[in-house]
Image (cartoon, rainbow, N blue to C red; front, top):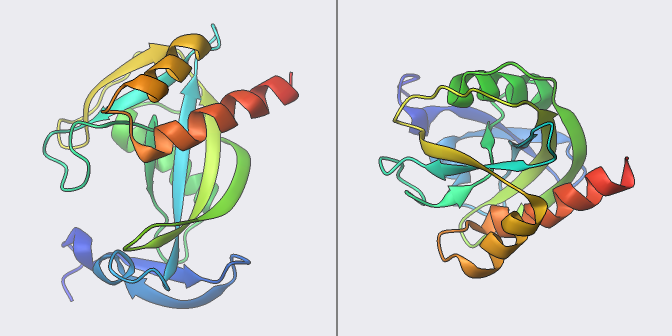
Amino acid sequence: MNPADPQEELFDVVNENDEVVGEAIRREVHLDPKLIHRVVHIWIINDKGEILLQQRSMKKDKAPGMWDISCGGHVRKGHDPELTAERELEEELGIKADCKLIKKYVQGHAEQTEMVYLYYANHNGPFTFNDGEVEQVKFYSREDAIKFIETDPLASFFAIQQIPMVFEYLEKTK
């Protein structure tokens, strides 16, 4: 195993109750939907109540160029999801912000199953990122974000699924 290879990164495998039941490397969890692994998804909200979408780098191996969650990543073996979320914000967007948990849930796909920790954080930018992760970012009003995910073929699955969840949660907690 080569720890410098991202495909060799080690993750906790959890059950549907988010209890650790084993471990596996990235390559394995991305090819076996029985191996539930943790991920963090963070949506950035600015002071105007707008939501930040990220266009994934054209260099990404999965979904290059798609408009997606503001920031996200995998939770490494033994790591805390909230600390992972805050680390991902620094790595992908060059910011520090407190992440607030909206909910966690299991999301199955054809090749993999994830325990999604869904967060939001308040930040107005500016953002800095390396070109290996992010192509560009853009804030959208609630109305424009909903219109975007309903009509644009470059809106990712998670953008379509989670943007309404985030706005619904923020509305309930006003």
